[in-house]
Amino acid sequence: MIAVRRLFAPAVLLLALALAGPAAAGLEQSGVVSERPVAWTPNVLDGTVDAIAVTGDLVVVGGNFSAVADAATGVRYRRKHLFAFQLGTGRILDAAPDLDGPVTALAAAPGGGVFVAGRFGHVNGVPRTGLVQLDPATGQVVPGFTATTGKGQIRTLAAAGPWLYAGGTFTTIGGLPRVGLARLDAATGATDPAFDLRLARADRGLVKVEAVAVTAGGARLAAVGAFDTAAGRRRAQLLVADLAGPAPAVADWSTGAYTSRCNSLYDSYLRGVDFAPDGTWFAVTATGGLSGRTRMCDSAARFDLAGSGDHPPVWVNRTGGNTLWSVAVTGAAVYVGGHQQWMDNPAGHKSAGPGAVSRPGIAALDPATGAALPWNPTHSRGVGVGVLVACPAGLIVGSDTDRMGGEYHGRIGLLPTA
Image (cartoon, rainbow, N blue to C red; front, side, top):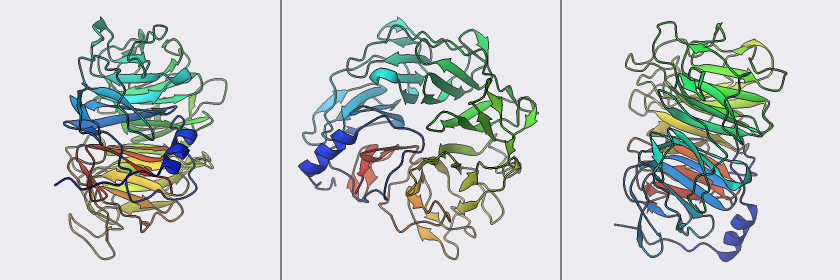
């Protein structure tokens, strides 16, 4: 049964519109967001929401789906792989860009556009392989951005200043050899010849960058995925790069936390990364299929950036064997999403161990200690909450399921700022 849902107070609606802005890594929020979702977000009726970007007062949603519906009226719209709606009202835009494959990543572009990556070869009937910039209000291609991708796919995007960072399984981009990670000119799409971190795997397996984040000032980058060296330096699944100098370079920052294996089915087990608002630390999330007090599988962890050499985690919060996919750091909380059942559960083995707290699908952790905060809106689990985006209006949540806060919210919802 679909729950009866609340109206959103006009004053709060106006505040959300006034404060709306581009989502950024480490967006500062003064407190933990509400456990009660707003009533007006549209419903995605099938498939999965895999990417979300906020630009101005618009939320752009990408993934593998074919239909959406207005929350208030129930009116259905055909929207294949991509659509946009207005913050504060949930109004679904008329723009319906035609992509012939799923969207895997989004990032807000300068001037109100949006970068769109995915497994597509045509956009609006015109050949555009894997990466394009669109005007979300019209659905039309922005003509000046002409990036091209080769074999493989883009799985993650992060925009910062004049640059767009792309990670995935590609081996060339813009005609240049780039394995898994590249930097593009945000205006033209041209690949930056100075940025090449030379990711590799000793077993010669497929290099894969799962997630990338950049500090708000654009000085540092963190990337996670299936690699064990960067520029010839040992960097097991996690690297930090310095971007502020004359040439981008792998930072003298490392950790041995993720050198051990988890389930042998996983070529890597890190899945999400986000910086704190002040850029001095970041948090990561992991899958892995194994549990235990000493393993880093199925956990969230914080790492500080200060200093050089090896960095152990400041804290680790373990689920007891359930995957965490996504993370968003706001200063007030470290939000994590997945298909976890518990947090604070180092002794659990797909079960609640001593001290475990129930946090199905979504949780908020104390930035200083890593302990689960009392906040517990709950989210239906499924494959899990794969997208968390903090914006001035609150926390936007994307997934493959349709229950949050005890209500029906089809694959996307917003937990508002208090």
